[in-house]
Every structure is written in structure tokens, then in C-alpha cells.
Length: 375
Image 1: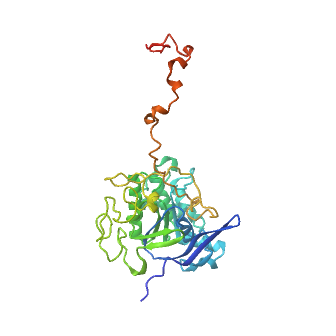
Image 2: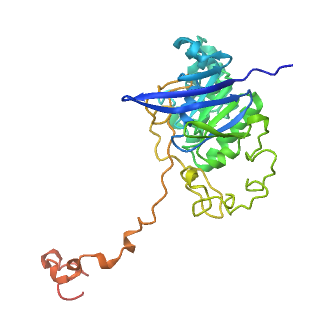
Image 3: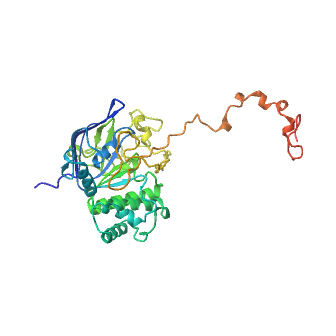
């Protein structure tokens, strides 16, 4: 007896962009399968190809080489209108920057994808209201985005992605613009919907705590998949520890001593024991001895769903294409407070009272310094 067909299947998929006569390989032979009900975290440093892969999995672009099947259909055999219909029926999109229509109510934002299906206005409102009730916003149907909090806006965006009853939900940094408490609530909502409705959840994230919640973790680097916790028939654990090796409380594989932050001993690392190649991927709010929290992105400026990479088309059935914020860089310890600067570097003329113009002091103000003495 065979199981259900894969929701998405990619076989040796590649994507090359031509930029001013230069070919850039964004993806180089990626193969993966997303099954119905999967909960996958897609991680990797900036420039690793995560957003390009998400773009392809969502049917917003076509591969240069290889085979990509979404909902049982080979995307290379589809016309643009057929691709749009496939996205609308199969894929739901959740973006970091929400991308709600600002002058439109919550229920109308959620109902928007149904317009392209030809659903009547009354049915659109009924279905949108029902999905908003599922995400806990049944009392906010007629509120506009500027009348809601960030967490409520993201729940509206999730409802909009679910109203078409997709088989796959693609979430690009869904907690990036939220504080830690609100972000955790959004993740719990996504996980509940994944468990209850069986929709496959594929989430791009830079946050290792968020990625650790997924049942499967796919790690990318330089346009290829370098690790897949569910590959080769190995069961995926909640913390993505390698199957067959018990994991400690901090996720380090048994038999290898771990440092305070869970990095395996004996591996080159930064001052806190982390692999320097992924140092810029860790949450910047990490403090030794305390758990990391989500860091809001410094900007919510809308860009394409693939980030700032050139050559990516925008748009999608779930709303306007969104952005992948970058975490702010760590402060350079050399950029210390000016109050700690070496006073010996100051111009000696600036400290000589004889250089000051006595006319600049107001003799009528108490405490005004006079040349040659103190007040």
C-alpha cells in the first residue's frame, strides 16, 4: 500500500541567474521531499540559497535545471496562468512583514485570495471569518491593520494563507518582526495548525531556537543542502540531533563534551564556542547563561520574498512578496563610549583656558567660567 504523494518534490534542482553577463549559481543540485504534514525548518547563513529555494518551492520561479513537482505537477510544464492557479490552490505564504492591505479590514484581507477563485462575496466573507476565528481573531473582523498589534497582524496574514486550504504553508521569517513573547505565540499557532489540519509547514529562519522546534531541519550552504535531519530514512528529533545518537539537554551529541552553549568541544569556534562560519546566524540577544530571545529585524521595508537577491520575481497568491530581515551586526568592542577615549589624544590647545575667547562666556550667568580662574 502506497502512502500519499509528496506535497513537494525537488530532484537535482538548480537555479542560475545572469547578472550583467555573469552567471551566478544560487542553487546547485538540491534534492528534497516535503511530505503532507511535515514541519521543516530551513536554515543557513545569508547567501546560502534559502530564499531562492523557498521561491521555487512556492512556485514563484522555475528552476534552471532539474525537476520540481508541486502538488503532483511538474512546474516546467505549466504556463504562467497554470502556475498562478497552482500557487493559489496549493501554497499558502506567510511573510515577515505581514503585507496586509493597510486600508482594508482583516476579513477583507483574508478573503483576498478567494477573489481569484471566483468565490462569491458572501462566501468569501464567511470563509474568511471562519479562518480568523481559528486564529483567535473572530472579534477583530472589521479592524484595519493599523488598529491591530504586530502579533494580530501576523495572525491575519496566517489566516489569509490558510483560507484557500493549501497543502503547504511557506513561512519566511514569520517571527522576525515580533518580540519574543508574541513570536512564541505565533509559532505555537503555526504548530497547532500543522498538527490539526495536516498542512505541511516549511519555515525559513535564522533563529536557532525557532529551528529547534521543527521536527526536521534542512541546512543549506553555498547553494546546496549540507544536512537534512530526516534524510535517508532517519527519524528527525525535536532538536534535530543526529538519529541513532542520544542527545543531551543542550542538543550536543552524546559522547562529545559540550561547552556552555552546546557547541561540541574540539571544534573551532568563537569566544563562546560556536562555529565561526555560522556566528552571524545566531540570535544577537544571546547572553551567556541565559536563553536567547528573538531579535526584531531592524527594518520592515518590503522587498521580494527572496530577500534582496537580484533576479527574483515578486508576488504570490498570499499577498505581496515579503522581506528576510537581517539581524543587526554585533557591536564592535572598539567602538567604545567616547567617554572612555584616551585623553592623551586630545588637542592640548582645547584644554588651555588661554585659547578660549573670554567674550563667549556670559558674565551674568552663575557658574560661567572666566579666563584665568574658576567660579
